[in-house]
Length: 189
View (tube, rainbow, N blue to C red):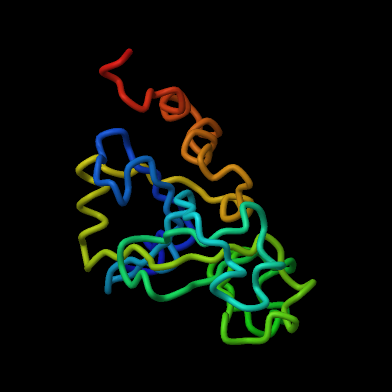
């Protein structure tokens, strides 16, 4: 895979045929995608666990809902922070934040939260991540399990994560926008 074919920074939106409970109606932000495989976080699976209960100092900095999100089925005991930082690539980045794509970047949760206070927006904390071995994601996309679409910075911190799947599809052009109305259970239609 070449850098030109990397999908880093794009969204994977689960198609209605994807019924795995970890990914049904999931919206995944790809944090890394190269010849070694892919890694991302599910943006729309909140847990009932409040950020402040597990990460001292970070609870006041996250958006609503102020809970930990399940980023995927891998390494659920590891926390990962994502946030938006203003500025363009090439400008000095805030300490404790590393650009992934555009204005979206990873937050060093080992850094003191007060160092980043006021520097970041849309902070969200994830437990775990989703990962694919080399070629696995490409095969899943070819099989029709995922739609690959562009990400907007607000996607990582949607205040209504339960509506993210529909809202991402709705903003697409053509037939993909119509899928936003696809029922949870088509057999009840």
